[in-house]
Length: 245
Image 1 (cartoon, rainbow, N blue to C red):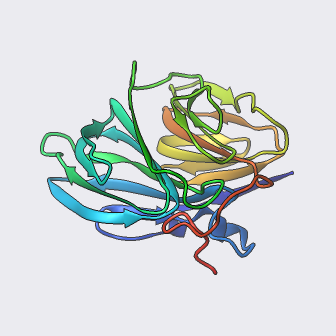
Image 2: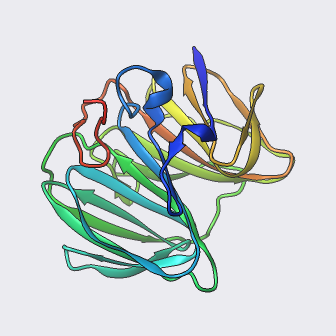
């Protein structure tokens, strides 16, 4: 059993985007943890464009909680994404996209999540999800999974949940689909106590075979990443791949 805290100092990057390679804190020769390759936390004020750029063998979830941006890609899609519309991109052999920030009224903040595919060179795919509600309060919402129970379907054994924990409430981990999974609990906003470990915004904790209780005095928004480290994955994706090799 194990709990491992990842503090803000483990982020790198600049220009409003901070990059987390969650495996670095484990010192096990991999910048990721199982299928969880990389997490970018974006906080961008004003307009601007991230120009058309490639992805190869990455599966990318755009999880924005404020602001909006215009997405264009090589599959011909053009959509405005933001807090009410999430996007999942499966980049196989080659896929291009660009994002134009539209944050004059509200700064753009969210996560760009890079998941490792089960195998290389899968067919590119783009899926959009119009949310029925912005938050799931005090209970876990399954956002994406490796099964057919969600609109966003990873090719690997990966699950992502989120919740908004209100002031004074507590929560446990959701019922996970199989045993011996590894969890990464990420604080997107606010502060929590997980067992006896305090976590603030942009901090996270790795959970392996541990019972955990999560509480918040003043409220928090949380994202839970779950991976089967024994599952089949491709570790050489352009952004999600292991950068130690």
